[in-house]
Image 1 (cartoon, rainbow over the protein chains, first blue to last red):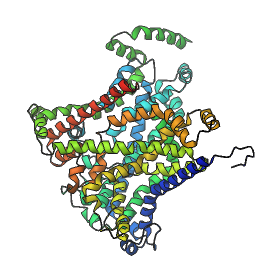
Image 2 (image 1 turned 30 degrees about the vertical axis):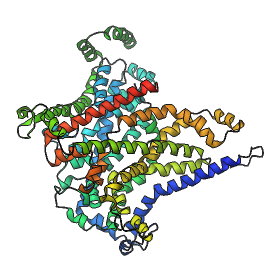
Image 3 (image 1 turned 90 degrees about the vertical axis):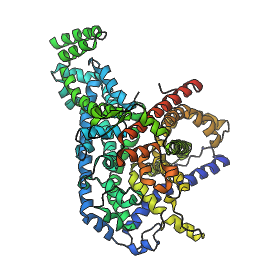
Image 4 (image 1 turned 45 degrees about the vertical axis):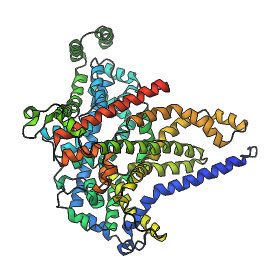
Length: 297
Length: 322
């Protein structure tokens, strides 16, 4: 900060207040970051030190054995592959279906626009609920397939509204001139609208990707085949299995019996690393996403 | 040139057509906006299959549903499933737990991001501000499985919390097997995860406040602390009210995917909520009709809450969502 000779000195009370604010925020930041530090420290420490309860903040000793065990585990490897496939496919489907659905809804000349908008809007307030939805997917023969993980979530009324409002803010004159040049609506969407919509595509895409990467509940409901499990399901078994129901299949229970603290924390690091690596990139869009979401109208 | 003329005639037809019937509108679009109509088809199929088709299954709430007989073949039993639910020994427990957990969560988790936003707003250095924001947003991107996993380690038998307690001579506490700690762990981890992200909206609203107000207050000798109460909070009032209505409306939709990971039969007496009961009855015990009925009951109550919260707010605070 530049020193300003004319600056009025802050009153005493304010300086006391400000130091309070800084102290509280410092504690808060510590609480926020501590679990991350702890997880990383345990995962790279010597397992013996971990068992002895000596690792509380900084790592003690150095041992990457836990990572090697996890990476070499065939089930963990398959699950990682599955999660990547689900995330890539699910995000692409989301962007494709949302864009192609939102575009007609952004055009005033489209007569069916009010009706179609209502069709989508209703689904924001009413749904089948857990069991009817489960039964519906069952009767569609989607249970235990990759499709149940990537298709149903691909179109949400919320995302359609976000994208439609973004499309509507693009000046109509751009589409007009393209019409005059003889472009069809599809060409306008692909060549004019989408290149201008990168911020909204990135926001929806990133949030969808993180959601799929982090989700376990759909897999818990709709998948039985361990070979199709995403990472979070395996992680759930390693980390929190103790509280879980006996109806679970036993084929990979050896994973959780043998899981030491080091293995548990290493699996967390491996699973969460891609998100943490993309965090600086995501961060640009966090505020944007939140703000567009709140003024959707 | 001809296209522009066509455009003009088209726009006059739009005005005529807007009062016409559904079929004639569809006809119009088929004639002039065929591509837009075709582009709408994939989305309509998706929404029909994955949002509307499941709604058909709600009727199983009034059936003795069996997978082999399907919806058409299963026996209709009227409100028997609901009567069975009201007489269920767990009825009061899950209703009470849902409301208590939702209310306790609202009580602590709702003000937390407001306070954080006020604190962050006081930070003078832009870099420090950014750092605090980055650190507090981070947990939002961590999965519930990981959060519960970390909690179970930190609060476990050999975890550091019990290690600290041992220094004071306290015996190890089984945090996850004692009902008394469940709510604190649930609410606390929720705040840890969402406080930063939820503060974004408040921070944005604070940015919109005219800086001259603070200048004027300062001239009049108003302390920073008082400025919060007389300028910032009143300016945040509309934002707070809208978010509060939303929060009250969602009070019974507790985050049951987290509860499912956290609870155990030992803590059912405080942790078992309506949705976790639906999951156990429906997916584990395959009692489909009964669990559909509970789910329908849950949706009806939550609709009442959303509309009720909005009604009360419109009546007493003259602000509403719609």
